[in-house]
Image 1 (cartoon, rainbow, N blue to C red):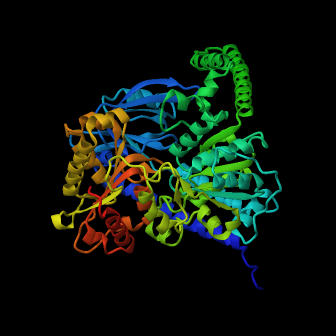
Image 2 (cartoon, rainbow, N blue to C red):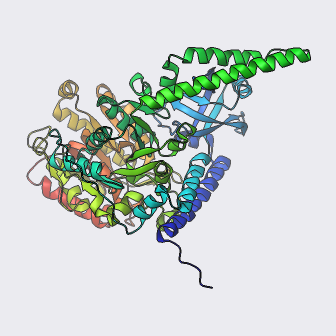
Length: 633
Protein backbone atom coordinates (compact mmCIF):
# COMPACT_ATOMS: atom_id res chain seq x y z
CA UNK A 1 0.00 0.00 0.00
CA UNK A 2 1.33 3.39 -0.97
CA UNK A 3 2.33 5.58 2.00
CA UNK A 4 0.70 9.04 2.10
CA UNK A 5 3.04 11.90 1.21
CA UNK A 6 4.42 13.86 4.15
CA UNK A 7 3.11 17.41 4.31
CA UNK A 8 5.90 19.71 2.99
CA UNK A 9 6.06 22.01 6.07
CA UNK A 10 6.16 18.93 8.33
CA UNK A 11 8.95 17.39 6.25
CA UNK A 12 10.88 20.66 6.53
CA UNK A 13 10.50 20.68 10.32
CA UNK A 14 11.51 17.02 10.59
CA UNK A 15 14.67 17.82 8.64
CA UNK A 16 15.31 20.83 10.89
CA UNK A 17 14.91 18.62 13.97
CA UNK A 18 17.38 16.09 12.55
CA UNK A 19 19.96 18.83 11.99
CA UNK A 20 19.33 20.29 15.44
CA UNK A 21 20.01 16.86 16.97
CA UNK A 22 23.31 16.79 15.07
CA UNK A 23 24.18 20.17 16.57
CA UNK A 24 23.08 18.99 20.03
CA UNK A 25 25.26 15.88 19.86
CA UNK A 26 28.23 17.82 18.50
CA UNK A 27 28.05 20.55 21.15
CA UNK A 28 27.57 18.05 23.98
CA UNK A 29 30.55 16.00 22.83
CA UNK A 30 32.62 19.18 22.40
CA UNK A 31 31.73 20.31 25.91
CA UNK A 32 32.70 16.94 27.34
CA UNK A 33 36.00 16.95 25.47
CA UNK A 34 36.85 20.48 26.59
CA UNK A 35 35.94 19.70 30.19
CA UNK A 36 38.27 16.72 30.21
CA UNK A 37 41.20 18.08 28.22
CA UNK A 38 41.24 21.89 28.29
CA UNK A 39 43.21 23.57 31.04
CA UNK A 40 41.62 26.06 33.42
CA UNK A 41 43.73 28.96 32.11
CA UNK A 42 42.47 28.43 28.55
CA UNK A 43 38.87 28.23 29.75
CA UNK A 44 39.32 31.54 31.56
CA UNK A 45 40.72 33.14 28.39
CA UNK A 46 37.77 31.89 26.39
CA UNK A 47 35.35 33.51 28.84
CA UNK A 48 33.68 30.23 29.90
CA UNK A 49 35.27 30.00 33.34
CA UNK A 50 36.01 32.14 36.41
CA UNK A 51 39.04 31.09 38.43
CA UNK A 52 39.97 31.88 41.09
CA UNK A 53 36.62 32.88 42.54
CA UNK A 54 35.03 32.76 45.97
CA UNK A 55 31.54 32.37 47.37
CA UNK A 56 30.08 35.49 48.96
CA UNK A 57 26.81 36.08 50.77
CA UNK A 58 23.77 33.89 50.27
CA UNK A 59 20.06 34.62 50.62
CA UNK A 60 16.61 33.71 49.37
CA UNK A 61 15.61 35.92 46.45
CA UNK A 62 12.14 37.37 45.95
CA UNK A 63 11.03 34.18 44.18
CA UNK A 64 12.05 32.10 47.23
CA UNK A 65 15.04 30.58 45.45
CA UNK A 66 18.37 30.10 47.30
CA UNK A 67 20.85 32.51 45.73
CA UNK A 68 24.63 32.74 46.06
CA UNK A 69 26.96 35.57 45.07
CA UNK A 70 30.18 34.56 43.32
CA UNK A 71 33.01 37.07 42.97
CA UNK A 72 36.33 37.02 41.17
CA UNK A 73 39.13 39.21 42.43
CA UNK A 74 41.46 39.21 39.43
CA UNK A 75 41.33 42.26 37.16
CA UNK A 76 40.97 41.00 33.58
CA UNK A 77 40.21 42.34 30.12
CA UNK A 78 38.60 39.06 29.11
CA UNK A 79 34.87 39.27 28.41
CA UNK A 80 32.93 36.35 29.84
CA UNK A 81 29.90 34.50 28.47
CA UNK A 82 27.94 34.18 31.72
CA UNK A 83 24.40 35.57 31.46
CA UNK A 84 20.89 34.98 32.75
CA UNK A 85 19.59 31.42 32.40
CA UNK A 86 22.89 29.72 31.59
CA UNK A 87 23.79 26.64 33.70
CA UNK A 88 27.13 26.49 35.54
CA UNK A 89 29.10 23.92 37.53
CA UNK A 90 31.74 24.32 40.26
CA UNK A 91 35.21 22.87 40.68
CA UNK A 92 38.32 23.00 42.84
CA UNK A 93 41.90 22.84 41.56
CA UNK A 94 44.65 21.27 43.66
CA UNK A 95 48.24 22.49 43.79
CA UNK A 96 49.25 19.84 41.24
CA UNK A 97 46.62 21.16 38.78
CA UNK A 98 44.07 18.37 39.24
CA UNK A 99 40.49 19.58 38.82
CA UNK A 100 37.69 18.14 40.97
CA UNK A 101 34.08 18.99 40.06
CA UNK A 102 31.21 19.44 42.51
CA UNK A 103 27.94 17.66 41.76
CA UNK A 104 25.38 20.50 41.78
CA UNK A 105 24.43 22.53 38.73
CA UNK A 106 23.40 26.16 39.32
CA UNK A 107 21.83 28.77 37.05
CA UNK A 108 23.01 32.32 36.41
CA UNK A 109 20.57 34.98 37.60
CA UNK A 110 22.73 37.91 36.49
CA UNK A 111 26.39 38.72 36.05
CA UNK A 112 28.65 41.77 35.90
CA UNK A 113 32.38 41.80 35.07
CA UNK A 114 33.44 40.64 38.53
CA UNK A 115 30.30 39.42 40.31
CA UNK A 116 27.40 37.13 39.53
CA UNK A 117 24.38 35.77 41.35
CA UNK A 118 23.57 32.09 40.94
CA UNK A 119 20.32 30.27 41.70
CA UNK A 120 21.32 27.21 43.70
CA UNK A 121 19.60 23.81 44.09
CA UNK A 122 19.67 23.98 47.93
CA UNK A 123 21.33 25.59 50.94
CA UNK A 124 23.54 22.60 51.77
CA UNK A 125 25.49 23.12 48.55
CA UNK A 126 26.00 26.79 49.41
CA UNK A 127 27.55 25.94 52.77
CA UNK A 128 29.94 23.50 51.10
CA UNK A 129 31.08 26.14 48.60
CA UNK A 130 31.48 28.84 51.26
CA UNK A 131 33.82 26.53 53.16
CA UNK A 132 36.29 26.64 50.23
CA UNK A 133 38.78 29.51 50.09
CA UNK A 134 38.80 29.50 46.27
CA UNK A 135 36.64 27.78 43.71
CA UNK A 136 36.10 27.76 39.97
CA UNK A 137 32.84 28.37 38.11
CA UNK A 138 32.45 27.03 34.59
CA UNK A 139 29.65 27.23 32.05
CA UNK A 140 27.85 23.90 31.78
CA UNK A 141 26.27 22.30 28.73
CA UNK A 142 22.90 24.03 28.18
CA UNK A 143 20.53 21.10 28.02
CA UNK A 144 17.47 23.25 28.81
CA UNK A 145 17.61 25.34 25.63
CA UNK A 146 17.86 22.28 23.41
CA UNK A 147 15.00 20.53 25.19
CA UNK A 148 12.83 23.62 24.77
CA UNK A 149 13.56 23.67 21.02
CA UNK A 150 12.92 19.92 20.61
CA UNK A 151 9.65 20.23 22.52
CA UNK A 152 8.56 23.16 20.34
CA UNK A 153 9.36 21.32 17.10
CA UNK A 154 7.45 18.28 18.33
CA UNK A 155 4.41 20.47 19.10
CA UNK A 156 4.53 22.19 15.71
CA UNK A 157 5.00 18.96 13.76
CA UNK A 158 2.08 17.35 15.58
CA UNK A 159 -0.25 20.37 15.42
CA UNK A 160 -3.56 19.66 13.70
CA UNK A 161 -6.70 21.74 13.24
CA UNK A 162 -5.57 24.67 15.40
CA UNK A 163 -3.94 28.08 14.97
CA UNK A 164 -0.44 26.63 15.36
CA UNK A 165 -1.06 24.23 12.49
CA UNK A 166 -2.38 27.09 10.36
CA UNK A 167 0.68 29.24 11.10
CA UNK A 168 3.02 26.33 10.38
CA UNK A 169 1.45 25.70 6.97
CA UNK A 170 1.35 29.38 6.12
CA UNK A 171 4.89 30.28 7.24
CA UNK A 172 6.51 27.20 5.68
CA UNK A 173 4.13 26.52 2.81
CA UNK A 174 2.99 28.21 -0.37
CA UNK A 175 -0.11 29.89 1.10
CA UNK A 176 -0.04 33.68 0.83
CA UNK A 177 -0.19 35.66 4.04
CA UNK A 178 -3.52 37.35 4.70
CA UNK A 179 -4.15 41.04 5.23
CA UNK A 180 -6.96 43.00 6.84
CA UNK A 181 -8.32 46.37 5.83
CA UNK A 182 -7.44 49.09 8.33
CA UNK A 183 -7.42 52.85 8.00
CA UNK A 184 -3.72 53.78 7.76
CA UNK A 185 -2.15 55.56 10.71
CA UNK A 186 -0.08 58.66 10.11
CA UNK A 187 3.29 58.83 11.86
CA UNK A 188 4.96 62.01 10.63
CA UNK A 189 8.04 61.49 12.83
CA UNK A 190 8.90 58.39 10.76
CA UNK A 191 10.05 58.37 7.15
CA UNK A 192 7.79 57.03 4.39
CA UNK A 193 9.21 53.50 4.41
CA UNK A 194 9.08 53.24 8.20
CA UNK A 195 5.48 54.46 8.30
CA UNK A 196 4.51 51.99 5.58
CA UNK A 197 6.22 49.17 7.53
CA UNK A 198 4.21 49.99 10.68
CA UNK A 199 0.96 49.99 8.70
CA UNK A 200 1.85 46.69 7.03
CA UNK A 201 2.43 45.17 10.48
CA UNK A 202 -0.97 46.42 11.65
CA UNK A 203 -2.74 45.04 8.57
CA UNK A 204 -1.10 41.60 8.64
CA UNK A 205 -3.41 38.75 9.64
CA UNK A 206 -0.66 36.17 9.96
CA UNK A 207 2.87 37.40 9.43
CA UNK A 208 4.88 40.54 8.70
CA UNK A 209 8.62 41.04 8.26
CA UNK A 210 10.50 44.29 8.90
CA UNK A 211 13.84 44.08 7.10
CA UNK A 212 16.13 46.71 8.58
CA UNK A 213 19.63 47.12 7.08
CA UNK A 214 22.28 48.90 9.22
CA UNK A 215 21.29 52.33 10.50
CA UNK A 216 17.80 52.37 8.93
CA UNK A 217 15.90 52.72 12.21
CA UNK A 218 14.62 49.16 12.52
CA UNK A 219 14.26 49.41 16.32
CA UNK A 220 12.45 52.76 16.04
CA UNK A 221 10.05 51.25 13.52
CA UNK A 222 9.48 48.13 15.60
CA UNK A 223 8.78 50.16 18.76
CA UNK A 224 6.14 52.19 16.89
CA UNK A 225 4.62 49.00 15.47
CA UNK A 226 4.35 47.56 18.99
CA UNK A 227 2.96 50.84 20.35
CA UNK A 228 0.27 50.99 17.64
CA UNK A 229 -0.56 47.30 18.04
CA UNK A 230 -1.23 47.93 21.73
CA UNK A 231 -3.98 50.35 20.71
CA UNK A 232 -5.74 47.31 19.24
CA UNK A 233 -4.63 44.49 21.56
CA UNK A 234 -4.28 44.50 25.36
CA UNK A 235 -0.92 42.73 25.50
CA UNK A 236 1.84 41.45 23.18
CA UNK A 237 4.85 39.16 23.55
CA UNK A 238 8.23 40.59 22.49
CA UNK A 239 11.19 38.23 22.12
CA UNK A 240 14.73 38.11 20.77
CA UNK A 241 17.49 35.55 20.61
CA UNK A 242 19.83 37.21 23.12
CA UNK A 243 19.36 38.90 26.49
CA UNK A 244 21.16 41.99 25.15
CA UNK A 245 18.65 42.33 22.28
CA UNK A 246 15.71 41.90 24.68
CA UNK A 247 17.22 44.58 26.94
CA UNK A 248 17.59 46.99 24.04
CA UNK A 249 14.03 46.73 22.74
CA UNK A 250 12.62 46.72 26.31
CA UNK A 251 14.48 49.92 27.18
CA UNK A 252 13.20 51.66 24.05
CA UNK A 253 9.64 50.57 24.83
CA UNK A 254 9.91 51.86 28.40
CA UNK A 255 11.20 55.19 27.02
CA UNK A 256 8.12 55.25 24.78
CA UNK A 257 5.90 54.96 27.85
CA UNK A 258 4.98 51.29 27.45
CA UNK A 259 4.62 49.06 30.54
CA UNK A 260 7.08 46.16 30.14
CA UNK A 261 7.44 43.02 32.23
CA UNK A 262 10.83 41.45 31.56
CA UNK A 263 11.05 37.71 32.15
CA UNK A 264 14.66 37.07 33.13
CA UNK A 265 17.36 39.44 34.24
CA UNK A 266 19.08 41.96 31.94
CA UNK A 267 22.63 41.57 30.69
CA UNK A 268 23.38 45.14 31.83
CA UNK A 269 22.61 45.34 35.52
CA UNK A 270 21.51 48.85 36.48
CA UNK A 271 18.47 50.34 38.19
CA UNK A 272 16.72 51.34 34.98
CA UNK A 273 17.05 47.89 33.43
CA UNK A 274 16.20 46.04 36.63
CA UNK A 275 13.13 48.19 37.29
CA UNK A 276 10.97 46.36 34.73
CA UNK A 277 12.14 42.79 35.49
CA UNK A 278 9.67 40.30 36.87
CA UNK A 279 11.75 39.71 40.01
CA UNK A 280 12.03 43.43 40.88
CA UNK A 281 8.32 44.03 40.16
CA UNK A 282 7.43 40.97 42.24
CA UNK A 283 9.26 42.21 45.33
CA UNK A 284 7.81 45.72 44.86
CA UNK A 285 4.21 44.46 45.01
CA UNK A 286 2.21 45.58 48.11
CA UNK A 287 1.49 41.95 49.06
CA UNK A 288 5.12 40.85 48.89
CA UNK A 289 5.96 41.79 52.51
CA UNK A 290 3.29 39.40 53.79
CA UNK A 291 4.44 36.67 51.39
CA UNK A 292 8.05 37.09 52.49
CA UNK A 293 7.12 36.80 56.18
CA UNK A 294 5.08 33.63 55.47
CA UNK A 295 7.96 32.04 53.57
CA UNK A 296 10.31 32.89 56.41
CA UNK A 297 7.89 31.31 58.89
CA UNK A 298 7.71 28.16 56.73
CA UNK A 299 11.51 27.82 56.72
CA UNK A 300 11.74 28.35 60.47
CA UNK A 301 8.88 25.96 61.22
CA UNK A 302 10.42 23.22 59.08
CA UNK A 303 13.48 23.22 61.38
CA UNK A 304 11.52 22.89 64.61
CA UNK A 305 12.07 19.66 66.54
CA UNK A 306 8.88 17.62 67.06
CA UNK A 307 8.90 14.90 69.73
CA UNK A 308 5.28 13.79 70.04
CA UNK A 309 2.63 12.81 67.50
CA UNK A 310 0.45 15.77 68.51
CA UNK A 311 3.33 18.18 67.97
CA UNK A 312 4.08 16.73 64.55
CA UNK A 313 0.41 16.96 63.54
CA UNK A 314 0.17 20.53 64.80
CA UNK A 315 3.26 21.60 62.88
CA UNK A 316 2.07 19.77 59.74
CA UNK A 317 -1.29 21.54 59.86
CA UNK A 318 0.35 24.89 60.52
CA UNK A 319 2.72 24.41 57.54
CA UNK A 320 -0.20 23.41 55.33
CA UNK A 321 -2.07 26.63 56.19
CA UNK A 322 1.05 28.75 55.61
CA UNK A 323 1.74 27.14 52.24
CA UNK A 324 -1.85 27.58 51.10
CA UNK A 325 -1.70 31.27 51.99
CA UNK A 326 1.69 31.65 50.25
CA UNK A 327 0.35 30.03 47.06
CA UNK A 328 -2.70 32.33 47.04
CA UNK A 329 -0.53 35.40 47.53
CA UNK A 330 1.88 34.35 44.78
CA UNK A 331 -1.01 33.79 42.36
CA UNK A 332 -2.43 37.19 43.29
CA UNK A 333 0.89 38.98 42.71
CA UNK A 334 1.47 37.19 39.40
CA UNK A 335 -2.02 38.06 38.17
CA UNK A 336 -1.52 41.73 39.05
CA UNK A 337 1.90 41.86 37.36
CA UNK A 338 0.76 40.21 34.13
CA UNK A 339 -2.52 42.10 33.94
CA UNK A 340 -0.79 45.48 34.35
CA UNK A 341 1.91 44.83 31.72
CA UNK A 342 1.29 45.71 28.09
CA UNK A 343 4.45 43.95 26.87
CA UNK A 344 5.88 40.66 28.13
CA UNK A 345 9.54 40.57 27.06
CA UNK A 346 11.89 37.58 27.12
CA UNK A 347 14.42 35.66 25.09
CA UNK A 348 12.94 33.06 22.76
CA UNK A 349 14.04 30.23 25.05
CA UNK A 350 12.72 32.01 28.15
CA UNK A 351 9.27 32.27 26.54
CA UNK A 352 9.06 28.63 27.62
CA UNK A 353 9.27 29.79 31.27
CA UNK A 354 6.68 28.35 33.67
CA UNK A 355 5.42 31.90 34.30
CA UNK A 356 4.08 32.01 30.74
CA UNK A 357 2.35 28.63 30.86
CA UNK A 358 -1.20 29.04 29.60
CA UNK A 359 -0.67 32.58 28.33
CA UNK A 360 -1.61 33.35 24.72
CA UNK A 361 -0.95 36.54 22.80
CA UNK A 362 -2.56 38.13 19.79
CA UNK A 363 0.82 39.16 18.38
CA UNK A 364 4.39 37.99 18.86
CA UNK A 365 7.24 40.32 17.88
CA UNK A 366 10.65 38.69 17.32
CA UNK A 367 13.52 41.18 17.14
CA UNK A 368 16.91 40.23 15.61
CA UNK A 369 15.04 37.29 14.06
CA UNK A 370 17.82 36.63 11.54
CA UNK A 371 20.12 35.61 14.43
CA UNK A 372 17.75 32.97 15.80
CA UNK A 373 17.55 29.32 14.89
CA UNK A 374 14.16 28.45 13.42
CA UNK A 375 13.46 26.01 16.27
CA UNK A 376 13.96 28.80 18.83
CA UNK A 377 11.37 30.95 17.03
CA UNK A 378 8.78 28.18 17.24
CA UNK A 379 9.12 28.11 21.05
CA UNK A 380 7.44 31.52 21.15
CA UNK A 381 5.23 31.20 18.04
CA UNK A 382 3.27 28.46 19.83
CA UNK A 383 1.86 31.16 22.14
CA UNK A 384 0.71 33.61 19.43
CA UNK A 385 -1.96 34.08 16.78
CA UNK A 386 0.27 36.07 14.43
CA UNK A 387 3.96 36.88 14.25
CA UNK A 388 6.09 39.88 13.29
CA UNK A 389 9.78 39.31 12.60
CA UNK A 390 12.34 42.10 12.48
CA UNK A 391 16.03 41.97 11.65
CA UNK A 392 18.46 41.70 8.77
CA UNK A 393 19.48 38.35 7.29
CA UNK A 394 22.45 40.09 5.66
CA UNK A 395 24.04 40.62 9.09
CA UNK A 396 25.04 38.16 11.82
CA UNK A 397 23.65 34.63 11.37
CA UNK A 398 22.73 32.17 14.16
CA UNK A 399 25.60 30.41 15.88
CA UNK A 400 25.96 26.84 14.58
CA UNK A 401 29.01 24.85 15.71
CA UNK A 402 28.52 21.61 13.77
CA UNK A 403 29.86 22.12 10.25
CA UNK A 404 27.75 19.33 8.71
CA UNK A 405 24.56 20.69 10.26
CA UNK A 406 25.39 24.17 9.00
CA UNK A 407 26.19 22.89 5.52
CA UNK A 408 22.85 21.08 5.36
CA UNK A 409 20.90 24.20 6.32
CA UNK A 410 20.53 24.45 10.10
CA UNK A 411 21.64 28.09 9.89
CA UNK A 412 18.87 28.99 7.43
CA UNK A 413 16.52 31.08 9.52
CA UNK A 414 12.76 31.47 9.45
CA UNK A 415 13.20 35.12 8.52
CA UNK A 416 15.35 34.22 5.49
CA UNK A 417 12.70 31.77 4.31
CA UNK A 418 9.94 34.35 4.67
CA UNK A 419 11.90 37.02 2.80
CA UNK A 420 12.36 34.49 0.01
CA UNK A 421 8.86 32.96 -0.09
CA UNK A 422 6.58 35.73 1.24
CA UNK A 423 7.84 38.95 -0.39
CA UNK A 424 4.38 40.47 -0.02
CA UNK A 425 4.86 40.40 3.78
CA UNK A 426 8.28 42.10 3.77
CA UNK A 427 8.93 45.80 4.42
CA UNK A 428 12.46 46.93 3.50
CA UNK A 429 13.72 50.09 5.22
CA UNK A 430 16.00 52.04 2.90
CA UNK A 431 16.99 55.37 4.48
CA UNK A 432 19.94 55.05 6.86
CA UNK A 433 20.77 57.64 9.51
CA UNK A 434 24.18 56.44 10.70
CA UNK A 435 26.92 56.53 8.10
CA UNK A 436 28.66 58.86 5.74
CA UNK A 437 27.48 57.89 2.27
CA UNK A 438 30.92 56.64 1.25
CA UNK A 439 30.97 54.19 4.17
CA UNK A 440 27.45 53.01 3.36
CA UNK A 441 27.70 52.64 -0.41
CA UNK A 442 29.68 49.41 -0.74
CA UNK A 443 27.44 47.56 1.73
CA UNK A 444 24.35 48.88 -0.04
CA UNK A 445 25.56 47.75 -3.46
CA UNK A 446 26.80 44.32 -2.37
CA UNK A 447 24.09 43.25 0.09
CA UNK A 448 20.98 45.36 -0.64
CA UNK A 449 20.94 45.85 -4.39
CA UNK A 450 21.98 49.49 -4.12
CA UNK A 451 18.64 50.41 -2.51
CA UNK A 452 19.99 52.20 0.57
CA UNK A 453 20.36 55.95 0.67
CA UNK A 454 21.97 58.14 3.30
CA UNK A 455 19.80 60.72 5.04
CA UNK A 456 20.74 64.29 4.16
CA UNK A 457 22.09 65.14 7.62
CA UNK A 458 24.59 62.23 7.63
CA UNK A 459 25.47 62.00 3.95
CA UNK A 460 28.66 64.06 4.17
CA UNK A 461 29.34 63.77 7.90
CA UNK A 462 33.02 63.67 8.85
CA UNK A 463 35.53 64.53 11.54
CA UNK A 464 38.39 66.19 9.66
CA UNK A 465 38.41 68.38 6.57
CA UNK A 466 40.01 66.77 3.53
CA UNK A 467 39.81 63.33 5.14
CA UNK A 468 38.49 60.33 3.25
CA UNK A 469 35.72 58.52 5.16
CA UNK A 470 37.05 55.02 4.43
CA UNK A 471 40.68 53.82 4.34
CA UNK A 472 42.40 50.45 3.82
CA UNK A 473 45.95 50.12 5.19
CA UNK A 474 47.60 47.33 3.20
CA UNK A 475 50.03 45.32 5.35
CA UNK A 476 51.16 42.91 2.61
CA UNK A 477 54.48 44.67 2.00
CA UNK A 478 55.26 44.69 5.73
CA UNK A 479 55.57 40.89 5.86
CA UNK A 480 53.12 40.57 8.78
CA UNK A 481 51.98 37.00 9.47
CA UNK A 482 49.07 35.53 11.39
CA UNK A 483 49.60 32.99 14.19
CA UNK A 484 47.28 30.20 15.28
CA UNK A 485 46.58 30.28 19.03
CA UNK A 486 44.38 27.30 19.76
CA UNK A 487 41.44 25.39 18.37
CA UNK A 488 38.32 27.50 17.79
CA UNK A 489 39.89 30.38 19.71
CA UNK A 490 41.23 31.87 16.51
CA UNK A 491 44.17 33.67 15.03
CA UNK A 492 46.33 36.56 16.05
CA UNK A 493 48.48 39.05 14.12
CA UNK A 494 50.53 40.96 16.66
CA UNK A 495 52.33 43.17 14.15
CA UNK A 496 49.02 44.25 12.64
CA UNK A 497 47.67 44.97 16.12
CA UNK A 498 50.66 47.16 16.97
CA UNK A 499 50.29 49.01 13.66
CA UNK A 500 46.61 49.58 14.43
CA UNK A 501 47.51 51.10 17.82
CA UNK A 502 50.10 53.38 16.20
CA UNK A 503 47.65 54.45 13.48
CA UNK A 504 44.90 55.05 16.01
CA UNK A 505 47.23 57.12 18.18
CA UNK A 506 48.22 59.22 15.18
CA UNK A 507 44.60 59.75 14.16
CA UNK A 508 43.70 60.90 17.68
CA UNK A 509 46.61 63.35 17.52
CA UNK A 510 45.33 64.69 14.18
CA UNK A 511 41.82 65.21 15.57
CA UNK A 512 43.13 66.69 18.81
CA UNK A 513 42.92 64.97 22.16
CA UNK A 514 41.01 67.76 23.86
CA UNK A 515 38.47 67.89 21.04
CA UNK A 516 37.87 64.13 21.38
CA UNK A 517 37.23 64.55 25.09
CA UNK A 518 35.07 67.65 24.71
CA UNK A 519 32.93 66.28 21.87
CA UNK A 520 32.93 62.70 23.23
CA UNK A 521 34.09 61.27 19.91
CA UNK A 522 33.84 57.52 20.43
CA UNK A 523 36.05 54.93 18.75
CA UNK A 524 35.53 51.22 18.16
CA UNK A 525 38.22 48.64 17.41
CA UNK A 526 36.92 45.43 15.83
CA UNK A 527 38.53 42.12 14.96
CA UNK A 528 36.81 38.90 13.92
CA UNK A 529 39.12 36.91 16.21
CA UNK A 530 38.92 36.78 20.03
CA UNK A 531 42.67 36.33 20.40
CA UNK A 532 43.33 39.51 18.44
CA UNK A 533 40.72 41.37 20.50
CA UNK A 534 42.37 40.33 23.75
CA UNK A 535 45.82 41.28 22.46
CA UNK A 536 44.53 44.68 21.33
CA UNK A 537 42.97 45.24 24.75
CA UNK A 538 46.27 44.46 26.47
CA UNK A 539 48.12 46.83 24.11
CA UNK A 540 45.68 49.67 24.75
CA UNK A 541 45.70 49.03 28.50
CA UNK A 542 49.48 49.52 28.65
CA UNK A 543 49.55 52.47 26.24
CA UNK A 544 49.96 55.70 28.26
CA UNK A 545 49.12 57.90 25.25
CA UNK A 546 45.67 56.32 24.95
CA UNK A 547 44.97 56.36 28.69
CA UNK A 548 42.87 59.60 28.67
CA UNK A 549 40.58 58.18 25.97
CA UNK A 550 39.90 54.69 27.35
CA UNK A 551 36.32 55.55 28.33
CA UNK A 552 35.66 56.40 24.68
CA UNK A 553 37.38 53.27 23.31
CA UNK A 554 35.62 49.93 22.76
CA UNK A 555 37.46 46.81 21.60
CA UNK A 556 35.42 43.74 20.68
CA UNK A 557 34.64 41.03 18.15
CA UNK A 558 32.21 41.58 15.30
CA UNK A 559 29.49 39.78 17.27
CA UNK A 560 30.13 42.09 20.23
CA UNK A 561 29.47 45.16 18.03
CA UNK A 562 26.17 43.92 16.59
CA UNK A 563 23.57 46.70 16.92
CA UNK A 564 26.17 49.30 17.94
CA UNK A 565 27.83 52.25 16.21
CA UNK A 566 30.82 54.53 16.79
CA UNK A 567 32.13 57.76 15.27
CA UNK A 568 35.36 56.00 14.24
CA UNK A 569 35.89 52.29 13.59
CA UNK A 570 39.20 50.46 13.11
CA UNK A 571 39.05 46.86 11.82
CA UNK A 572 41.92 44.37 12.09
CA UNK A 573 41.34 41.54 9.59
CA UNK A 574 44.28 39.47 11.00
CA UNK A 575 44.58 36.96 8.13
CA UNK A 576 47.96 37.06 6.36
CA UNK A 577 49.26 33.84 4.81
CA UNK A 578 50.78 32.51 1.61
CA UNK A 579 47.76 30.36 0.73
CA UNK A 580 45.10 33.07 0.62
CA UNK A 581 43.15 31.34 3.39
CA UNK A 582 40.67 33.66 5.14
CA UNK A 583 38.69 31.15 7.24
CA UNK A 584 35.40 32.42 8.60
CA UNK A 585 36.05 35.90 7.16
CA UNK A 586 34.35 34.29 4.15
CA UNK A 587 31.07 34.65 6.09
CA UNK A 588 30.40 38.02 4.53
CA UNK A 589 27.49 38.83 6.81
CA UNK A 590 29.96 39.36 9.65
CA UNK A 591 32.01 41.73 7.55
CA UNK A 592 28.83 43.60 6.63
CA UNK A 593 28.31 44.22 10.36
CA UNK A 594 31.92 45.33 10.84
CA UNK A 595 32.08 47.88 8.02
CA UNK A 596 28.69 49.44 8.86
CA UNK A 597 29.42 50.35 12.51
CA UNK A 598 31.23 53.62 11.65
CA UNK A 599 29.46 56.96 11.45
CA UNK A 600 32.25 59.16 10.08
CA UNK A 601 35.52 57.24 9.66
CA UNK A 602 36.32 53.61 8.81
CA UNK A 603 39.88 52.26 8.79
CA UNK A 604 40.56 48.66 7.68
CA UNK A 605 43.94 47.00 8.25
CA UNK A 606 44.57 43.85 6.25
CA UNK A 607 46.91 41.96 3.95
CA UNK A 608 45.64 42.80 0.47
CA UNK A 609 47.45 39.87 -1.17
CA UNK A 610 45.75 37.38 1.14
CA UNK A 611 42.32 39.03 0.99
CA UNK A 612 42.38 39.50 -2.80
CA UNK A 613 41.77 35.77 -3.23
CA UNK A 614 38.13 36.43 -2.34
CA UNK A 615 35.93 38.46 -4.68
CA UNK A 616 34.19 40.39 -1.88
CA UNK A 617 37.44 41.72 -0.39
CA UNK A 618 38.92 42.33 -3.83
CA UNK A 619 35.93 44.51 -4.70
CA UNK A 620 35.97 46.19 -1.28
CA UNK A 621 39.64 47.06 -1.66
CA UNK A 622 39.03 48.47 -5.13
CA UNK A 623 36.11 50.53 -3.81
CA UNK A 624 38.19 51.91 -0.91
CA UNK A 625 41.12 52.83 -3.17
CA UNK A 626 38.80 54.65 -5.56
CA UNK A 627 37.39 56.65 -2.64
CA UNK A 628 40.85 57.44 -1.29
CA UNK A 629 42.07 59.11 -4.45
CA UNK A 630 42.71 62.77 -3.80
CA UNK A 631 42.12 62.55 -0.03
CA UNK A 632 45.02 61.91 2.36
CA UNK A 633 44.57 59.68 5.43
